[in-house]
Length: 135
Image 1: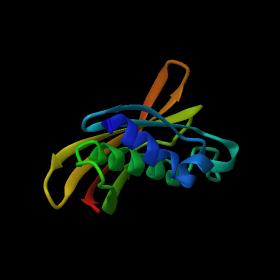
Image 2: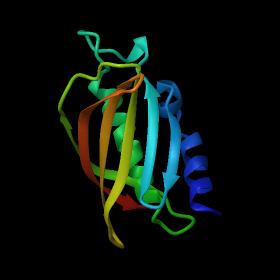
Image 3: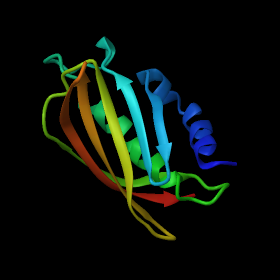
């Protein structure tokens, strides 16, 4: 099975991503982009997208980037993930761009950048770095 098909099939099983209205925008070896609208149901008290939204799609984008370098029949799980929130997530949607930093046999180091977008305007709102383990 092709890498993109494997990732899309796995992503379709994630009910959390469905709840957030997230979609898989692109898949390439070592890179995955996930997009989610900033819905009224995911705002924090000051009207910005909640950090939990940025973390959820950033973690998934990073994790799926790791899956693109795994052999068929494997999945990955997050061992640890760190997030730096750099600006309020104000906009229409969040875009999480995940990538593999280093793929080892036992762990895969990954990262993701999360951007808030409105029309053509784009602001970098979060950075994530973490470790995935093949399962």
